[in-house]
Image (tube, rainbow, N blue to C red; front, top):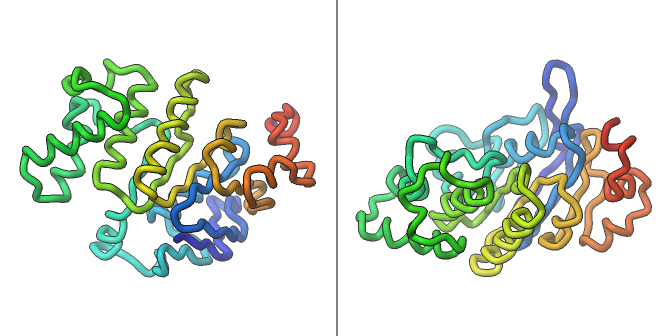
Length: 247
């Protein structure tokens, strides 16, 4: 579904992505791991069209994203759903209106159909109708994530992107969010990219894991392959060694 070929990107003379090559199979969950600040979110923003590469290609379902612009790009991006790191909920809208927002903006569905779809997504996230009238500042961190995931999936995307989906959550709620990713993936069959530095939970949701380090993918494979990878850099990250994480 997604193929990245020799992708490079620099900011102010600092090369963040230095020849990324990665293939993300259709219908599978690919998790990109690496320490904070290594460029995982920059990579994700290239794939969803928020950033343009200095060189290289991002091919999604056979289409080179760098060749798309304007309305053509916007139409293509309708196939995507994104769960941003902070959830990116609109503070001035309640839960129901937040989830309904993409349907109001991009479809001509009736109010009855919009309400039906919103409530189906709330139920999928194990949220009751009682939360519909609440505003984001009235929600816990975990509930915000679930509402944001409901909104990201409201248009039944073919491809889902998760940017650090459990940052700031306590371990039980982080497990809940990862469980929801697994659950919705099984139900919908979307292709997914998750960028995260949270271990070991990501190994439980991934079909494929790739490690980003110093601008390159230094290891990629099934979760058990990465957990047993001989590269000392990979093992240092997995073990959470302080010197590596802070270096």
